[in-house]
Image (cartoon, rainbow, N blue to C red; front, side):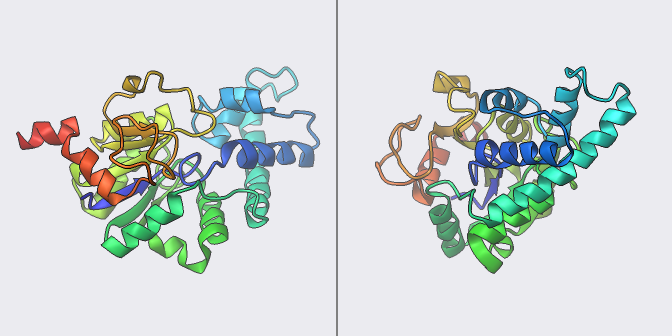
Length: 261
């Protein structure tokens, strides 16, 4: 049984990107009087860049109407990012962003079984707090023993910094935890820390790991925790993914077989 589950947030705990962060960025552009708008496809391409402020800087580098100087772009990016986070908090509070199916059930199961919970994300702390409060209420944040955000780990995924800090805070070896991720950058960050990864593909990364074997080193890969169908390796039952299934996958994971042979 894993001793801890370390969760990514965007695309993993919830499908935040398309209908949350993207919409909030557009609200920020409008509030700042800018004509820029990120449609669904363009934002999907920007997700190759990790971090909201970093996405803004990447996008501005290609815009002729962005500030010409690096300092000007940096100042505008910080302003827009603050506006975006405020807009995102409003969207989440209004119920526009929900936990992915099966997430709440696995969180509850971990609490009942004494499996520790942590968050390792590159999004802002305010965004995490807004989501947990809206979806889990006052008991949301205390469920997670460790919550590490962009403010704690400035080197964004695929850098493993945030996962190494999470293991340090939990006082666990990498083999004692499972990371729950949805993206190539998140997978790379967790694997560079030695942590087995449960990969639940999100909307924007639905086709990122085809065939499933392309996701090297994962514990298992599937389309969501709500169903055991379509996972690779195959789940033992069609119902939702729970701790029993995680335990079964861990038994045959290459990392464990190497360390315990």
